[in-house]
Length: 328
Image (tube, rainbow, N blue to C red):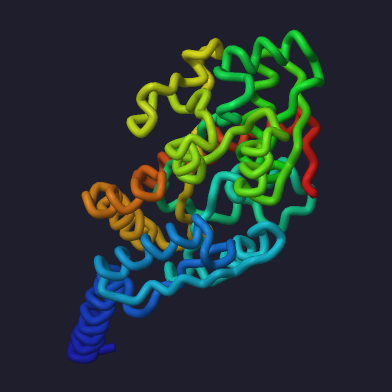
């Protein structure tokens, strides 16, 4: 190869390289260039669906692309989550999950088609919500201390309701039982509303419920709030003690929602999405919108959310194993 030919070859190579490098950089910075699909693994109209649509609307406004909510239901949300796990890891399919789907199912289902820690890249925690133990205002117990004392005095005589088998309200009551050494009978319902009806009718002793779901009935006097499961008292119920204050030191359970993407999503896309969700969480409008639905607007880095999922998975694995809880 003579000098002229060599110079020509080098020049051509440098020209190609200069074309490729900006394209790669542009590809990273241009995301997203088309609509994003946000899978909600629950039916339209419920709390999770409402949250998904609130998040989708604001994310769309921030990134300049449509964010389409797709309700992918079935098997308690497993079908929708699994579909996302098997989707292309390109940042255009993400899923909104509650703690049960992300951190409890692994302990309940031997043949779960996905593994949260193996198959997903955590993007951000997006919301937490408080839980409150409620009872009938006309009947005992009138406090969490009284509930625990009566349960100790009469093993197996009191009952408690839940939003369903292996729901957060079920698991956290089993956690309470273990911590204070009581025996109360679990009565699962299909959602909180059905359980509230039994509570108001005096046919159920009490239950943990979402603050957003129970608050209207508490404010109207149809339900009595005995204790909140948060670390500190809730501003919406300032006169209601925490479970920890009620004789169960350190007891704290929060419900939560977060965003996941398929495991191999590129880092720059994962970081971009996380940045957007964290910024959204700080917006006054978002905080107010979620607060009106009994939720707190929060955000987190992918690393912090991953750590939380691991911690929650182990915490509820111990509860499920000890209480011998099985999936329906």
